Length: 286
Image 1 (tube, helix red, strand yellow):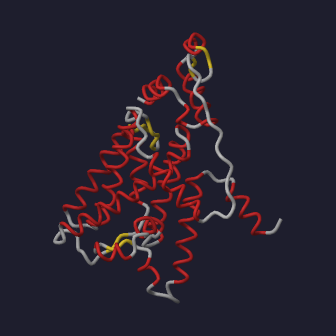
Image 2 (spheres, helix red, strand yellow; image 1 turned 180 degrees about the vertical axis):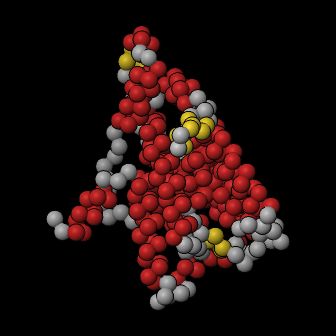
Image 3 (cartoon, rainbow, N blue to C red; image 1 turned 135 degrees about the vertical axis):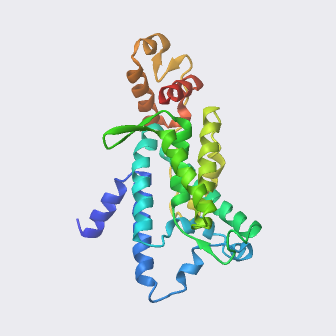
């Protein structure tokens, strides 16, 4: 096996968010090398503040999320995405995680465009935005809103997820007030709003990312040479919880119940859960 095959093998073993991280790192290196040869290349992929310039380059609503202004910018976003990915992929299927991430980037970009064109005195219209922060914030706030009381270990003490979310959002708002990168921070808040709304709707049994996911699948299929096999339809088992009879399931302790539901998610996806299973998982997250 040559080095290229080894890299392909290692890439194939990554989860979906780790693959996003790998792509971001590769794009950063490529643009770092090409920037000296083609200084204007970045202009075609970063999101401009001017609305008419955006209409000329509509793809930038997604591509800006793969660009970063420097190594520290890249490092913070990718480290955050890695750790958040470990949490969200243990609870939900990869498709939903990708929907939240990319919808966060899109909403962050739209928030940036809105602020830049409606309030040009606060958000300069000749600026631009790059970075995956809006997508990272979307996942973070989604988790904060979906299971706010979950403890996160921080050195020697625990922090509630919602504490972290409130603190970070507060810092973003203060940054806008102080004039510190207001456009970028507005994009962050766009991701925040998306993550919050997504979580609240999901607790009501409504996955608002399904339509977006189908659209992204359609876009991806345009670039595929071979057709992929259809997914097997999963039928929910009526009268059962996570594959067990209700009487059997009720005899389990809470951790065993959570484990069986998570095992079902890993095999069949979040959409295969019944309303009762979703409600129990939500309550367990609290």
